[in-house]
Image (tube, rainbow, N blue to C red; front, side):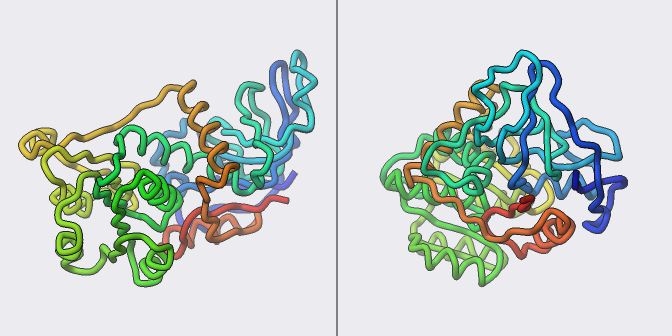
Length: 318
């Protein structure tokens, strides 16, 4: 089968198309013919430095989220699973390939009315956005700041915040991304690369009640300083290269709550199912901003690292 290999850490060019043996499902496993593979920012960091939650040795096939059709069953697997269209995590590696083998409990069925590529775009980002929105306890009238609002998770958070009746302040890097956010009809869109961006927020809405931090680093501290007493801050990304470093004592002194939900496997699956259901109902609309064929995985990583992408980036395998 066709696959993309990572044999050394480095720039995007270390992602090299090649072949790999066709996997075969063992007892309790299923084989998924992959149509689309999800790419996350963390995967680009892992490729560059080995940083990340993936416990694996090189060489390997990267990729932790795919969508496709179950075409083969291992011994002991319910025959009814054959032919089912699903999304699934791979366990950390193996997703940039035409076929993957996973435990029979891993795949989540794609509900009727939801396209497979949209399901792949929602699989990780949708469950993350739902988890964060629920943990924040969004209420009508809240003033909500979403950083990295043009990204996969951020764009979904803006939708969830708007649906809750909140005033949504969307922050992104660069005029093109900000223009796209303005076209989406959000209450305010600002460029956090521009000096004085927090002043623009204060002039428009005053302080804020909730910060969804998708950038980290110094910008996260600037966003933290916008919070009113009683505010909530949740971090979901490190597009700036490092997680937010807000001391607990600083939050206590300001009367701000730092929230960091840690769902277990059962809750993660329930969140994934809920995100897909919301997508099928038209209440969550993933933005697939760019797509690349499997053998151009290096180009996809390069585009993400250059901050040239909006929404979700997918690899189209078939």
